[in-house]
Structure formats: structure tokens, C-alpha cells
Image (cartoon, helix red, strand yellow):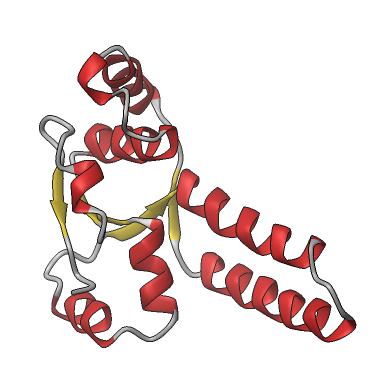
Length: 139
């Protein structure tokens, strides 16, 4: 199973050829995102809409929100389960991971709980998490 991080999903949605090629070449049919990635994407779109400075910006923000919702409907979204929440508790207790952002720890917890490979451009943040498999399809 492959889990697309927010940055990779954004690049895929923007038409990044590397991500699209890797996705087509992927032997594993299970490609999904986490509930955290869904929240991050929607929160960004909601904020953009609420902060729009003009009527044209409102219409653009609304179009982007609707396009993002259509994308999310096509994806399997992994929620937290017992194993993922257990992994989060273990990770959040490790002092060496204190600098890792909360959202990244949540995503990593789901990936570890599912024994999945996380597809992210942000290898630096995720590579410090023990036992987490990470790959970069963007570059």
C-alpha cells in the first residue's frame, strides 16, 4: 500500500509528470491518502475562500474548492484505527521526534499502522521516524 502525502497529492493534482508516471508504474493497486491529508487540503481551500479579497478571488477559490472535493471523492481516505492511534502514542512519547510536526506524526502513525509506504517529497521530516518507509515520486 502507498499513502500519498499532501505535497505529493498536490503535485499530482497539478499535473506533475513524475508523480503521474510513478503512479502508473506502481505495481500496488492500493494508493490512498490519510484523513489528515484530506483535512489539510480542505482547510487550505476553506481558508483561501474565506480570505478572498475580491469577487473574482471568491469565484476562483470556490472553483478550486470544488475541484479539490471532486479529487478527494476519487480517493480512498484512511482513517485512524486502533493500531494507528497506538503508533501515534508511541511516536509522540519519543523526545527525538519533538521537532516533527503534529500533522506529520499523525500521517506517519497511519502509515505505520497500515504497514504502508509513505510517498512524500518531505523526506527530511519523515526519515527520522523509525520503521517508516518513505519514497519521493515528485523529483
